[in-house]
Length: 284
Ligand SMILES: Nc1nc2c(ncn2[C@@H]2O[C@H](COP(=O)(O)OP(=O)(O)O)[C@@H](O)[C@H]2O)c(=O)[nH]1
Ligand SMILES: [Mg+2]
Image 1 (cartoon, rainbow, N blue to C red):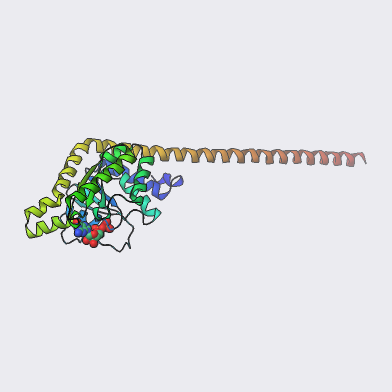
Image 2: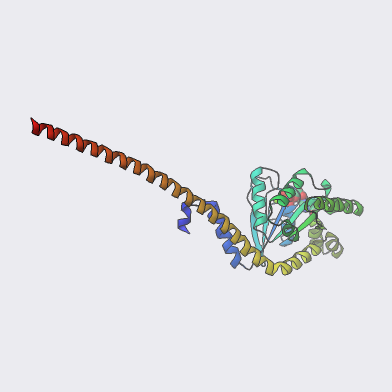
């Protein structure tokens, strides 16, 4: 790919390589996105059974804006910086979703329905995604921290409002699973089956399992499509650059020709003058 450097940026070459590599990997990528402090990292730790919360930093001071990924069984889990912190974070998150097979959109139930930043982000996806239904098919909205709400009805109300908000944006229903990572962790550590059940994490895991199986074939095709799409996009860009270069060359050639013509004229003039001088000399 070294010649590509002449036409493409480092980032473009790297994203192309990543997409190409992904086709050959029999690994599903699950990415957690959502606002900062909504429980993304905690949930990922729970999903990979790290109950000491050492893998994905929780209550992170946001010193890092990088996506972090960890492989567990045949799943690659990706944690992202919170949405809405900086424009460039949003772009990173968007890119992570694009490279992901299943997205967990985490929303903290204690904040009520989706806020403006989340709605804006989802609207951006709806507007710019090639096929926004595809995004919904691969996304589970996770209503986190349900242990903070005592009343089941309140959770249900928030859930319903979020369904409505999604419908407004995508004109389609979505899957929302209310969970408590904290209850699951406690249930496992204390061996309390009821807490584990109430945490709903098992339901989320089953859903992930179901989606992974359902999407398996589709995922391979999507990976290929994504690669082809990116390749086409970059190919177009390269062609445009080549055309630009050809135009430049053509302008330069014309300029060179004009210079050559001038030089030719000058030489002819000098020759004529010399001949005249010679003639005059002979006539003396
Ligand atoms: N009560 C409760 N707190 C949670 C739960 N999940 C996360 N938290 C807390 O929410 C805060 C933010 O969690 P974190 O995973 O770092 O959020 P992130 O910024 O979205 O990655 C931390 O203080 C967590 O302990 C949960 O299920 N229940
Ligand atoms: Mg985090």
